[in-house]
Image (tube, rainbow, N blue to C red; front, side):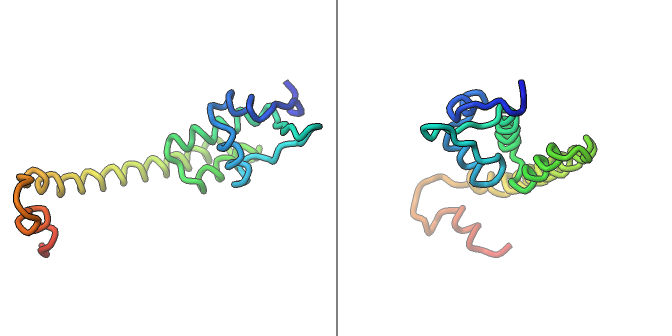
Length: 137
């Protein structure tokens, strides 16, 4: 199909697995081009936008930041970018995920004993969680 082929907003949303409001958000953020307006105000997108919107949705599902998504989109738009460039962005994100996972594990290890020690009875003044959080270690 030609890059000039067009698709209506509803069809784009359905094929990319998002709603129309999401597509409008992507437009507002400059992630996809504004649609061409046809007679009667019909918004016509490029058929190629299905893959682009799907790409954006999938990167968001994987937790990529908006700057990283923009960086990846810029790479897909430039023939000078390489798979290695994409790998570097994905590797940075993976390292960040692992750092956050480790941080969450540390927080869990600190909080779990406090929750276990709490009988859930008595006044707040006697709550072991409040007591532990109120005193410097």
